Length: 240
Image 1 (cartoon, rainbow, N blue to C red):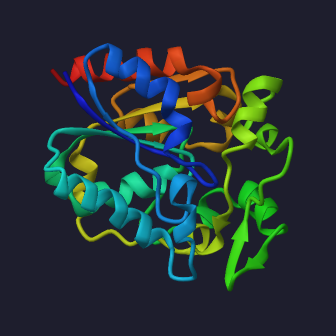
Image 2 (tube, one colour; image 1 turned 30 degrees about the vertical axis):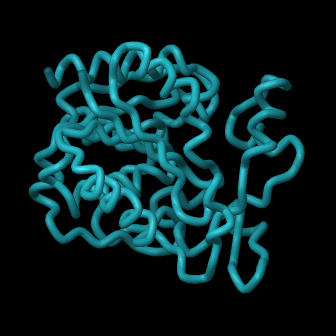
């Protein structure tokens, strides 16, 4: 069976993968779903030094200290920036990259550059909290921003969303080992509504056609966990 490291997106935490992690573990897979520094159950660590590099280090260090190899690294949304950077730093420990309706950055690109319209909307809500510029301020009903419209699931999500340090979205990713990172196989699970915003010809070419889409909200690991789990399991079987 495979080893998965599931990386969440902005304002979320490892908690958002709970249904998917349970499904993968039931199939016999090893699953890690950490919260990035300053987010989720690590929100008490929020501080002005946290940026994209911090979060890339979170995952790169997890791979090293847990001595994980041939990992299927999954990133949702902003987490696509993080897994790309982590695979660039630890290419020998990553066996597959999976982009879950995620950012798919080029060298020298920030999330703000990559998804300007949506991220610039978030920027308009920026405020300072304890010296940290933050966006995605949690509020009742904010889960709908991520496509979670079921009232029960939305309330559960609202209770767990946390502020996002703006520096994470503004910092440009810098590759140091791009050829090795690009050589790692990749797959894409995409929400149908975001297809027009993507270079699908490039994605299809680089992934050798391992692209699936589904008509659901952006937080598809919450709105369609069974589908996500099924596709991740299929990817794991391709690797074995």
